[in-house]
Amino acid sequence: MRRGREGAPLMPEERVELSACVEIQADIQACMRPASLLPMCRTPHLYEEFWTVTRNQESSARGTGVVSPLTPEIVVEDIIDSARLASAAKEDLILYTTDVTLSPASAFVKVRCFTPHRWLDILEIHVESSMASEERCQVHARGYSTGALPVNIPTAPLWNLLFCFIPFYDNQVIRNQWMALIREHMSFAVRIDDGRRPL
Image 1 (tube, rainbow, N blue to C red):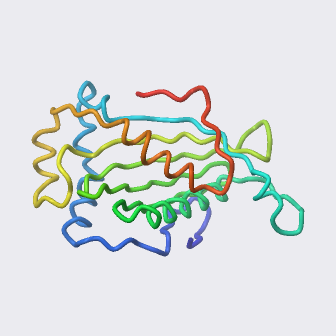
Image 2: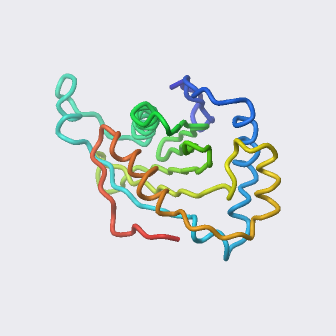
């Protein structure tokens, strides 16, 4: 991952190849987020989890035996690697990070998740240092669908904006597929805290 000055947005080096239509419409739809415009209609396709991330025995055993503090930057780099590994493991799914922001005590990464038919879901993952221990970080992972129509349909962002009032229930996909894939492919130990709840 490219590194910049503190607090500056960063971009991962690798980008997944998608069609120009999907890329452009995904950029538009990710900004507009039509499925999240109306409070009562967005609830069925929003989901959030709270994690505690710690070093597992394998990651602690690497190197010279001197264990450095687990920082938000290290955890975000692991999440970026996890998205890449998950995308490689599931040939019909595509996950990639679009932007990363780092500061000394916190970090943020956004993951775009595409289904085989190119519905676009987004994960926003905030990582903070733990005040209790240098060996753990606290994570707030929030996922949402961006629209009822997939982004491989021409003018999908417009249609999704016009039909933003249509409720659809897919927070199970965000919970059981996208968040599970990220957690499973991380090299650190991830515990889901009791604060886990649907929005």
